[in-house]
Amino acid sequence: MTRLLVAGLLILATGAAAGQAIYRWTDDKGRVQYGSQPPPNVKARPVADRVNSYEGPVEVRRAPASPTNAAREAGPVVMYSTSWCTYCAQARAYFAGRRIRYQEYDVEKSAEANAEYKRLGGRGVPLILHGGQMMSGFSEQSFEALVARSSR
Image (cartoon, rainbow, N blue to C red; front, side, top):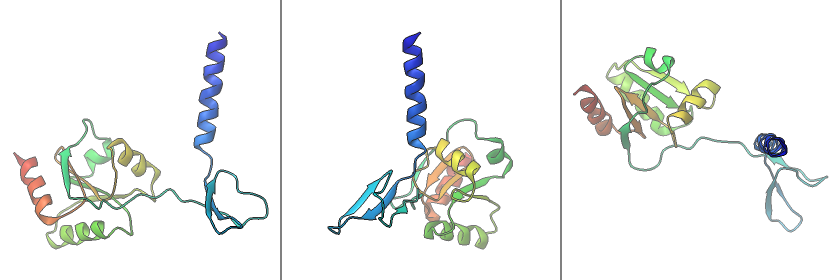
């Protein structure tokens, strides 16, 4: 019984720590410091949790089984993106130029989209789904290969 109580308290403490903000400030020696609680009388700002743009070579892999209803109903192409990502902008322009219907979810503006993006194992944007295949990053050739592979 005591072990269960201790385990429960540890889980609660871990959850509370995970929800704390991280702050950045410069100390009196000019060094940048990070922590959950800045010293008093120091100008500190919260560090934003940010999604990265996918900078590596385009990676295509099988999407995890059972996409959510939103992804299933969205149509043949689903893209998880951000507003500032240049690769996402390239994908949007490509889809528009070829009149490809797609559903886009901004992972920084929608908590649901962010949760699904994380469930899919997203490590950068864009994350594009088509026919059971998943692509991290964007290039025209890779997307066309993804569509061909999904159509088999």
